[in-house]
Picture (cartoon, one colour):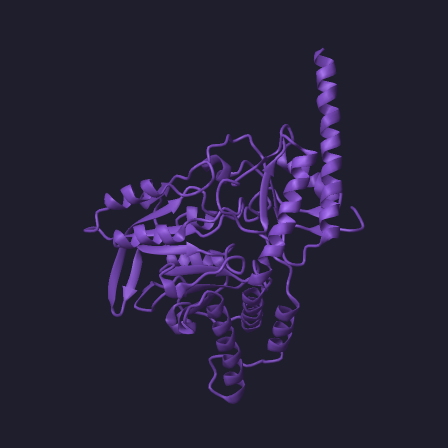
Length: 392
């Protein structure tokens, strides 16, 4: 292993922020249960409510509409259900519509049977086919239940940003409910829940520099909510049972506060991302960078090197001191063909590498990336020459 290392895998998990760490350490000194009515319990409750306000502020939502969960996957599993409640009445969602390029926690359909999940295609840039979505929703039989649409705001592999405002208009026009997975977008692009952005958002703490193991559902209103996935003692207004993870929630709140303040740094992050892409184009002119025809997150690039397997390149980068990924890190370390690229019309055999950075990424990190890629390119050129010589 190289002595110096560059961490370029923020979309998998961003480094823990100092403010989040400090908030967590302070919370660990509060031993009481946040549901207890004594002074110690009230102190713990205040910490949770402070974090709730901080998370709400990140997406301009109302604090009382934030429900803390164990992470984005639990949030998705909670929201993706046919069974909802409005007051004391029940509301049924009869079909779930997802993008073919969505994260697996949406693609798997949550609590919907597989037969009730429809996948909407994407174009070659990764943008959802809005005509197909509108057509599918027009054909939806609302006599059987409402349509539920779930889609990512920004793709975790390519960084491509979906036109959520247009999608929201289509869904609203069809009388449906829109769930937006904002895990990668939050803290990287501005999100305003007060402007009809979505009916429900999914957030994850560790993508924005908070601790792992905590996330949130953010609702635009509290008139209708999914039936709970986890029942218990009535915590989170009955939407998610179980004693709250006080330290993790405190860290999440601090990270959300820092992420909101850090939105102004995204232009500098984009410049560094562009430097990385320029290096790729110089060292590997035939490399393909995906999603460049659409708006993308400032911190993400996803590229493939001809004749080089993604897992082979990932190992080579790691040995050279560069941590990056071959797509999503949410498949138990499994490396295989990207379902995102397949949805975009690329073959199963194509492997790609994802570089995702943050405001702490510096010139030394980029230089380590350049040196590692130069070595990979040189070795591949030597192999290609040897193959040509043998063929001659």
